[in-house]
Amino acid sequence: MIYMPRLESAPLLRRDGTELQMNPYAGVLAHRPEILRKWAELSDTVRFSGVLPAELKEEMRRSTAAVVGCEFCASLGEPKSEYTDKREALAVAFAKTVAEDHRRVDKQTFAELREHFSAEEIVELVATACFVIMGGQTFGNVMGIESASDEDALAYEQWREDQLAKTPAA
Image (cartoon, rainbow, N blue to C red):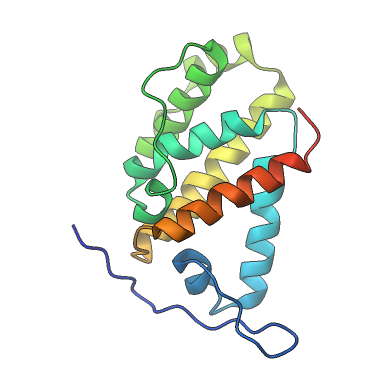
């Protein structure tokens, strides 16, 4: 399936007047620069701070992108084929449940989460799932944002590495 964005990218100018180069996702959000700035700030907070490892939250993102149908998000890394860590497996299963039908999250889901995660961690899991899946990936799907170019995918990985390097370990 060929994805065509429902809106073309908007230019975002630096203070010196030159145009900032952006990936297709940020380009669409750039129609509202103040939303783009706050969206990026919240994304950094949710994904790279807190009590859970950033890599666990990234795996939640990777495992749900195709389920939600965000071509851009899905093009930024494949999920693992299996999970040997119980907490990671549970976090991914929870994220997939939210992606498929958040109404299926029930008392049993939370009982299982409580066995392996603290209250702080559960809040962070839910916030990550809601922002990344219901916010980010759903936005990408609704706006029809196409897959990242190879250059954009490499830039994403470099950005993630840079964020991880300046983030204290969870």
